Length: 134
Image 1 (cartoon, rainbow, N blue to C red):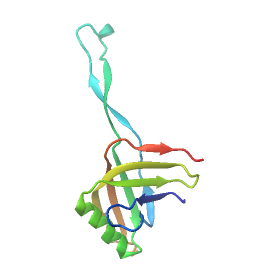
Image 2 (tube, rainbow, N blue to C red):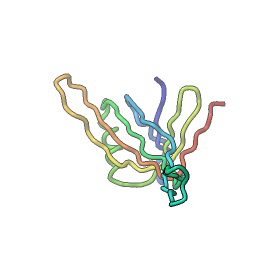
Image 3 (cartoon, rainbow, N blue to C red):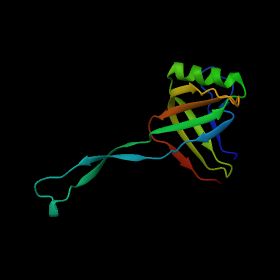
Image 4 (cartoon, rainbow, N blue to C red):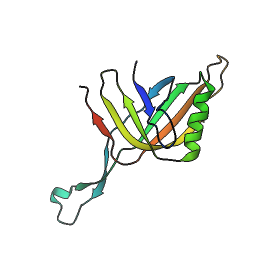
């Protein structure tokens, strides 16, 4: 509770855009590509690997639709394909900051209980930065 996702203002926007009513924010981190460095002299018949390029991956989102404006804003970001700055902030004050584009946005399944939901994915571009709480 209390963790937020915000797109920082850009261009002619007058304020940051907080993505409201989220029910989950996916993992953020770093994964290294692995490069097979095995050769005919590799000891004991074991494969050897070295680390290659780093990839920060994607951040999956899920939420409830309580305001149609959220749908319009997320759909517009997906349509624009623009790389924006995003911040995931924790109640402790720690945060992740990263650049990325909205790779997917989907209006959720419709069910008899009437809860309207959405899902989205932000593709991280470049290195995410973690800042610990003060």
